[in-house]
Image (tube, rainbow, N blue to C red):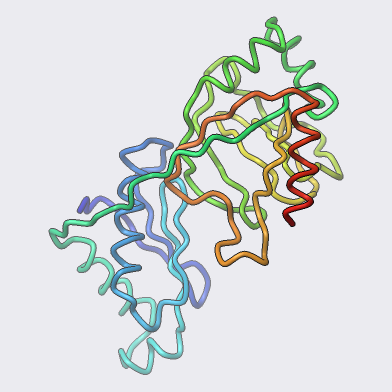
Length: 240
């Protein structure tokens, strides 16, 4: 396992393991290797593991660690994790799921798609073609429950966040921020450039696995018409 990482405190009951800070598959593979390996160890004092683009947050029970270690929890756990991750270990990462997510890019659902096209001197069809042509890695879930941060988008589509965030973005909205693309699983304020919407429910607390996407998933967007979007939305509500 790659040993080029650092470990620093993240509050009084968490720490963060960081690799080279870039959005690349090799770096993210190291994150997932560490995530799945530590998960497999089932250490009782680790309460959660949160993978991101180039880091892994480790939440732990500081009282339990201190009682076992007889010294500061962070220091002991840092030494333990460093030794663990520096070992030569073969980690089997689950085969990535390939998800096809339908998206309607109609301007009524993608309020920023027309302005983005004007700014880039291309057509809205160009945006749709470029966005749906790529296969995106889900690097992390965050911001909202089940919000998948994915990348990278085609260079032509890379666009800064809105200068003035919206007070309300509809659930299912598909957006672009910088080189990332993502989907709002719930209605929320937000500053991403919204280019479409999916009828798929990205988060359902009633399910055993509430988040539709997982880190490591490979996602492709499939363009659908406004009529298809409306039909699928009705089916989604019926299933709910």
